[in-house]
Length: 217
Image (cartoon, rainbow, N blue to C red; front, top):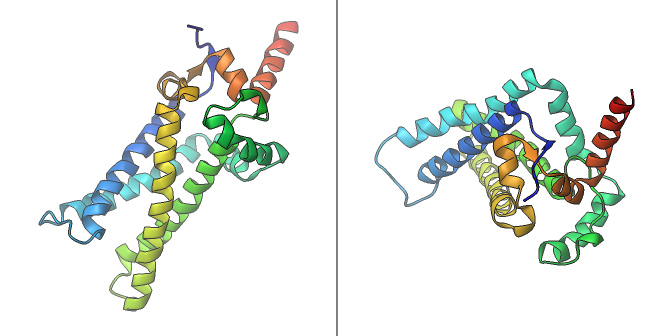
């Protein structure tokens, strides 16, 4: 097996990823108890846990931005910057992920188009969660019932969207045979040169050129 020597994720990024993921899973479980009809546990505990973990879910990115401001800004820039390769990726991806030829996939940068879609969903739904969650938490008794119901509806739609994408994210990161190094890279931050060249060709070529210039000097 090829040695994984390419640095892709820093330790703080890895910690942030797992804290955010754990918070999301807890929010799913406690949210089901709080919001879905017919599921009760007979106490206020799940609601309290839901609110506390919601603070972590929203607060963790803010803390990360404080320590990694440039990387956070790059994260947003990568998510909203699309070019021809991204649209070509969308056309080629269905065949590729069901076993089609890899050479039909356009070269990708630090993140591929699928990851851009996931990041856009995270950014958009997190904003909706922040607004609707704050309304339901602090202003529940001060707004009309109809407004509260629409707020709850928006919260639920955002959850459905991000949960579906979360399931796809888990499948691609853990189960898909062509993503064999994805999970391991979120443990030690490293991938192999072959995997880097296959999935992030433009990014890998750029760091190889930088290393070549350093060596030359």
